[in-house]
Image 1 (cartoon, one colour):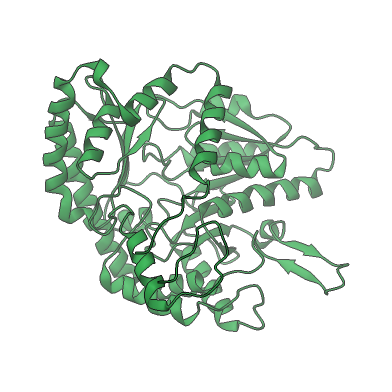
Image 2 (tube, one colour; image 1 turned 30 degrees about the horizontal axis):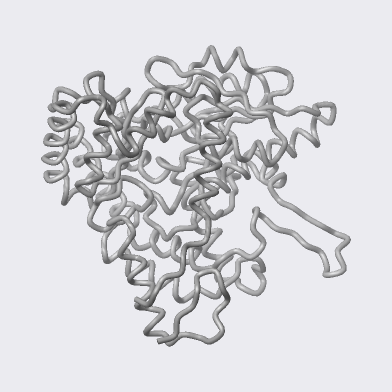
Length: 451
């Protein structure tokens, strides 16, 4: 059998059957997202939707959105996806946007547009800043780091939403952008977008709403009668919104959108070089080559599900979320933090070690996210959790009893690691810890045998 070392280029090719067997064996080590063991990362809407994704992705797997003249099909798909998303978010007729590879790129584009707009309209402003609440996604910090924008984070109110007075106090003459979340990833709450919009208008600065999680849920919940705080383009002052298709849009990975209220702001997102021997070069997003598969699959899923399909899925996940939250509260030892508006929430405890609980649940096959400030477990509910909610709650009750009966000194594994991290007063130590973890994670694996 042909084998190759992971760190060496193969001398000879492998038979396709061998490659397939190796890949399936590797996949078997991944979290069981189809069976509902994962509480995030993958948003699965069922085998029928998967089949639509696979067919569309395969049809355009070699397509390249870099050149819309060569691939007018992808241009059609992208512009229609953007238009449908803008309509869903109640944007006006002037709204424009682009598809991106994910929420991080969408947020990067929002920051770049505001930075480049400020460079053009306010050339005297040499030290741009953006003000974001503590709960805003770290991709905004990443964007600011890449683009030379200072990030100013503000504390949260008692309800885990952005504190408007703290945001106001942080705004100064260098501020070019505010941001809020709908909802914020850690606790599933929607920031006071209306108040942020009023401040943005008053100070003549942009406001981006990160609806990467909620963009394809909140509008449908509102139509189902749920009370959703204002967050979209109906709020004066909102200049851009990001919404991920590969989350609750149920599209293939690598698909998000960034929508602008006006084409003038989107122009600052574009990048152009005019003096290259290869000709005029322009790109609409960070990437040059833009894979056609995710664009086509997003278009296919939107048209396959339609409003009726999305409303049905939204209703399903909210019913499961309600049952899960009731079961969690009924343990008497756990509580849902804040007042989450959709199927994303955090669970804390004043009675037991929440990280130890996560370790025990991991032993039972449940992969729960771990959060800090305050310590909490993070749950995102996709449709597959409808089938496993009873089993999950049964395992949770048993795990709570087990943790409560154990001594604090018995903590091991990840719980112990988080406890150790919690004693680090210097953020530089935490950063070094994270850098060491990433470095170790992405080292080449040792040589392995055949499948």
